[in-house]
Length: 323
Length: 317
Image (cartoon, rainbow over all chains, first blue to last red; front, top):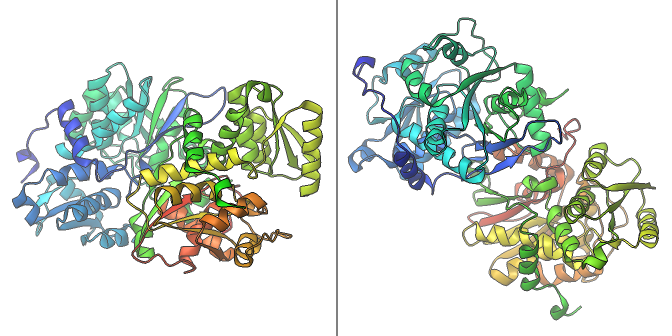
């Protein structure tokens, strides 16, 4: 299959998201929504703690939905995905729980801890250079892979699974006026945004990125998908792509109200604040939403900041939150 | 003390109804990584995600909201170097009455600041138990405030036990429950709940070897007070009361002790495995698993993670 022959992007319905929620209930954690206690003078921020999912990232929602929707014939042939980290763990976890074989095309520079965890979850790993993995992401194919691809963001059922988070947010905080989530591939924001806009269109949905990797903000300003020319690697490795893929732009555009950009330093400070006030460990990508909420650009709230994951090396975490 | 004078399940259920509006139902977390390391299924009840970052919010709320209007009117008083002071200040603020908190000089600044932020009125005293008790008695005499002891108080014990009720509801039938022992308030309430609802579940208390009054008392069948505590687990340096010891003797199956390096390593493993911040005291039960002090292979184990208030600039690694 080439990009030209991929099925066209179609909107996700609220019914699909509600069905996904039922389907994945036994696999995922209905994560808590907790107030970030900052005292007077700060926006009202509530944290949606997806870092507490069994694989410590929201990706399990989409993975569990995609795996649950396989036919019996497809289950036998197994699933595969392309990932440097959280999506691979999500698909491997969901596949193991469903008794489905799983292969992951991984970038050979991925941290050993993440590779080991995917192996421990029963996944077979195929190591490739970054460019090869990126091409597979764009074309949705990789030689030698049989079975169903669960794409780590450009996948209808995967995104519908993430939408379940939006339903939980509005149940737990009906007074929410804004929701902020990190943008990497764009699956999180597409799914949550779709659910939120279907239930309560007045709620604003924002995407957050680090200043070193902010193609969504560029795209939003331009009104079309863009590359980010000055891209730099950072500890925020779970968000901030080199570009917005056109198919993902098509999914996000109708359900997102704005793009917020924060510095790496603001992100680091948000990580410390969450550890201190809420006793949780967020990875860089998971702290972008909180850093963005703290700027005040999304208003005084109630703002729900999605803490998308907590997968980073603990020594690195301690170094980042140190003074 | 005879069994019929101990706490009952009804006391804990009543506490739960009384405090429902004032405490969080905290999540139970699992980790395939920690399960694989222990060859067991571990269910962590995350009281570090409770209000004020510790289970103490439960017992203080139950005690403060059990007072009659006449009793509560003049406020409440306690002595604490940590989480209980914040918990009482918070409960008093919710009830709309003053809270007088006696804290030892040199107490960790964030803890004093949290008490102040919650509206507590702090009196500082010498850092000895005698000085703390004397200062609190003076305040009670002057103000008429009701004393809310950190653990030697049936309402506090019953309130802490509500964490175990939730744990049992959110897990498959458990083979074993582990919780840390400081003054014994939590374990008295939690063991009461577990033994009433699930008699086949074993209940083991864990404490630092450097503050092992419960282990020695359990062994000797009589209360042996703690004379000297030497542990980083600052929440577990208190000595059992006769009443909490009576509950432990009647309802706990065994006591295990763990080393200081074991506590630090367990704390680190919990941060890594669960992506949450827990304080040293909260890591003590998991340390018993890692050090092989408690056999868990093949079992379903509930573990109460008691709190997450730690100075991020002074981590034990």
